[in-house]
Image 1: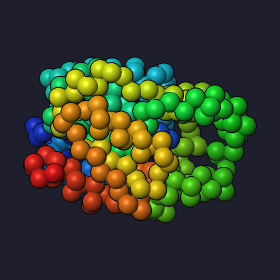
Image 2: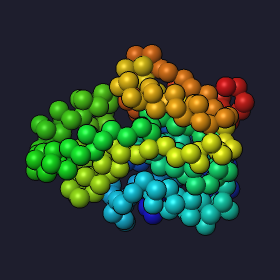
Image 3: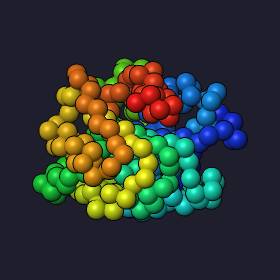
Image 4: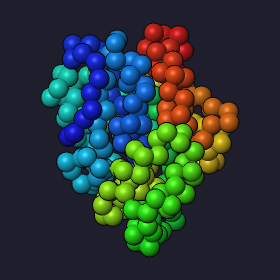
Length: 249
């Protein structure tokens, strides 16, 4: 597993799992803001540019993350956060090992399958994949994600180098992921975040997580898009993490 790390190794550990098609820079500003107090680890998810493994399943990624935490940090960390695909992996981690972290922040995680979307991903990607190395196409995709313009070069570099097979695999996994009953055993204190401008199914997913995780809080962010908080408003995202850790939520 390839990671980007900030802060000193003897500090409390925070692991942040980036969104699908993105990379560690998803949390770069947040890591800079937290590095003097915590040890920040940002793994590069399987199948993404810079990773040493192809993408297989969300379940396997979660198992790998747990093994990494077992090996590096004695099986428990202070906080884990995840956006979109990273949020799904975090949900699965909490299902597989209910005490893996003390706190968790799940942002814009789909946990209700979109079967038609899942079915259409392979043919759609096969048609569009030759275009991902074109800057004009990348700019159209980038604009649809509502990310700050300063992130375009990072986005273009990483997204244009993802293998087609990996892209299809993680997009299908994202669309098809279903929350497991084991999540009810989660022992972490969890903050669930979803944007007010996200699709209805994303808000329904956030509500389902709130229902199933006993020690959880749900916050719907007015006027925010998918992943908007951690990507474009890092200071507000950092503030919410600190409030959760310090017991102010």
